[in-house]
Length: 346
Image (tube, rainbow, N blue to C red; front, side, top):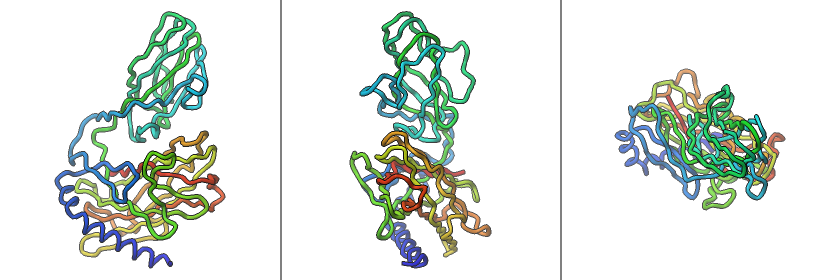
């Protein structure tokens, strides 16, 4: 199947989706910016959460408590760092892209616990990459063999990470994420997701280790995504996509690539481009998990496929994403699954 025929078929699918979803579009005009998101078990996923113009300094999003750090040895260990932490030691760990915390989160809420202490000390939790607060403590204890928890709200630092400092003695540290904060004026778009022709990605529902939008190894597995730019989109503004993914393999990379973009507007104005260098950057980075099923995050940008076509509210935007399985940079010999996809806009 040549590229022109494939694009024509995809555009036909988008038109069918648009006809089936006219009720959603009229609701969107009233409801506004929407959050997209979690994949699995269906073919069209969306739900609206926020009205255009809603602005708040931050918005709190609760999560089911999930352990993201435990320095105790296996089988209790979580996060890969085996302690205890020593006197003056700093450990930095990932919080975005883990346990449902998105990459645009600005702060995280955790229940932090110290265990098996050897003597008096304190723990400081602070943003990764920032200067360590010299006199600030989040947990304090005065004796050996103590277990003490405390709720901690901390700004997320460089690369979506948080650092923890132990003042003296030795201690094991446990962190359970309970929620996060995002900027109240962040704007998101809901997505239609549909597989393409033979060889496309497939949905794997349920709670299996590769549940999600599944891309097999050894071939160019593709999926297509569609959204409509909402009424509060700024003409020509930035559009940034991000998604989280994982594999069941260790220490290997997945080569994600942009495939094509197509933009339609009422009145039959249309622009399309098969070359991903026009309209879509390749998702970055090509990430490698040190352990199986560690969630990775990849980002990309979307824009007009031609310099003479300025994106406007109401434009229908479709883009393709594929895993370049045969590429030498794709070293995972198992499937990779996309867990979530988010589109943000100005």
